[in-house]
Length: 228
View 1 (cartoon, one colour):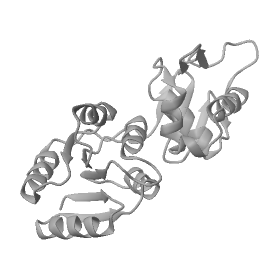
View 2 (cartoon, helix red, strand yellow; view 1 turned 30 degrees about the vertical axis):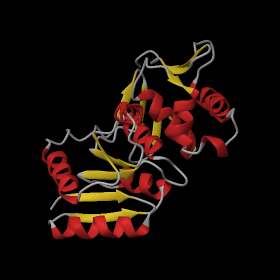
View 3 (cartoon, rainbow, N blue to C red; view 1 turned 90 degrees about the vertical axis):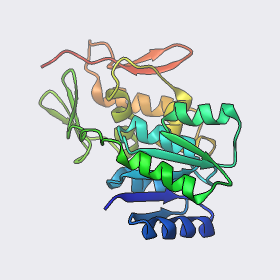
View 4 (spheres, rainbow, N blue to C red; view 1 turned 180 degrees about the vertical axis):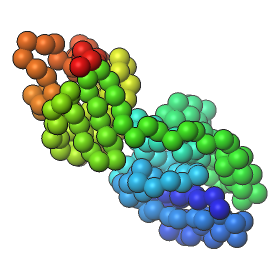
C-alpha cells in the first residue's frame, strides 16, 4: 500500500484529502504544521508528500529545500493558492515534482497522485557519507575523521551533513538557514557563521587548511581533506 503524508494547516482540507486518499487505497497521514511535517518526512518512508505552500512556521519551499539537501527524494506535490508562473517555477526549482493550484478538482489531484506514485523510487541512500577522511553516519549521528570520533550537536551535525553531501557546492547563508533552522526570522542572522566556527574548531587540524571554506560574498563550501 502506498503511503502519503499530507502537510496542510487547514484541518478541514487535511481531513478531506486523507479521507479521499484512503478511499482510493492509500495509507494517508497528516501533519498540521511545517515543523512536524518536515520531521515526519525525514524520519519515515513515504511514497508521496502532498505539501501546502503557505504554512505558519516553516513554508513548503523551506521544507522541500531541507528534504532535498538532506537527501530525501520522496516525490512532492505542492498545493497552493499562488498560481503565478514565477511561483510555480520557484516551487519546482526548490525540488518539488509537481504543482497544483487551489482550488483544484479531486479527479485531477488523484491523477497527479497516481502519476507521482508510479514513478520508480530512487535507490536507498547510503548509510554513511564519506568525503576525504571524514565519515558521517546519519542514522547513528556519528562523525569520524580518520580514527577520531567527533562529537557534534544536532544542529552542527545537520549543517555538516548538508555541506558534506555535496562537496564543492557553495551554499548561501539563506539556503543554510532555511535548511537547518527553517525559520530564519526567528534565529540570529549570524547563526550560520557561529555554527561554521563551531564545526571548524572540532574538525580542523593544526597546520591544515579548513575543510569548510568561505566563499566571500556568497556562502560556504566543503572541500574534502586528505584520505587517511
